[in-house]
Image (cartoon, rainbow, N blue to C red):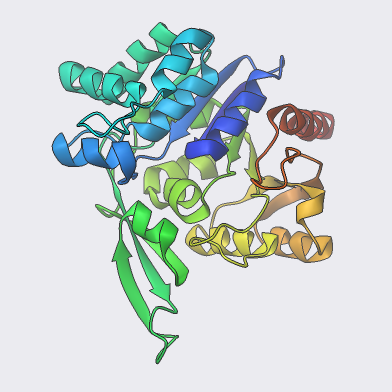
Length: 318
C-alpha cells in the first residue's frame, strides 16, 4: 500500500514513525506545511529570502530515515550565543541544497538519499507561505471584536480564540509531486498536529483540497490528544472536526481516529463526524497516546496498531 501523510512538526513525525512500523505500507510520502516563521526556520526565511522554511521538512526526513547517525546529526542544534546558536544542522543543510539546486523538491530528494529515507518528503507548495488568522477575545472591552494577526508563531501563541485562518499568498500553487502522490495513494492521513498552523493549511491550497476530494484513497483524520494552548484552548474533539469542516466544507473523510481516553463524550464526536463522512465512514477509538502525563503525544507503535485496524476494516468493506 502507498500512504500519504499531511501535516507538520511533531504530529507528522509521529504519524510517519507509525507508518514505518507497518509492513503493509510499501511507500510513504510526507507532505509538509511550509509556513513556519519562528526559530531557526524563521531566521533562514528572513536572511535567505525566498527559501522554504526547512524545520518541518527536516523533522519529516528524520522520521523516515534509516541512517540513524545522519538522522541524529540533522536534528542537532548548535548551542552558544553566536550566529549559529539555535540552528539545526539539517536546516542549514537543506537551505544550502535549496540555494545551490534552485529546486526544493530536488534538494529534499538529495537529502533523502543521504539519510536513507524510506519514502519521500515533499512540501505542500514550492513557495514559502504565511498564515493569517482572524482572532477574537483580544479586546476585553469588546471580546467579540475580531483582529487579524499574521504569522505561524503569532497564531500558535495568541491569547485570543482563533476563528479562521487563511494563507498568503491566497490560493498558492501546490507542489505537483504532492498532488500526484495524493492521487496515487491507498490511504491519506491528515493530522495530528497544531490544528490551525500544521493541519488546516493543507486544506487551504485549492489544488491539494481537490486532490483529496478526487483520490480513491482511504482518507483518515487523526485527532489530537488534547487542546493546544494558543491555537485550540478548551477545544473538544468535536470542535476540532467542526473547524476542519468549516475550512473545507466539501471534503469528506472515511475515518476519524482518536484516542478513547481523549474523547469524553463519544456520541458527540460521532454526531459531528457524520457531517463530514463518506457513506459507511466511522469514528475509530483506540489507545494511541504515549504514557507521558506531562506531554500529550502519540505513541508510534500504538498508532500503527490502530491504523492497521482501520485499514483491515477498509479491506473487508471492499
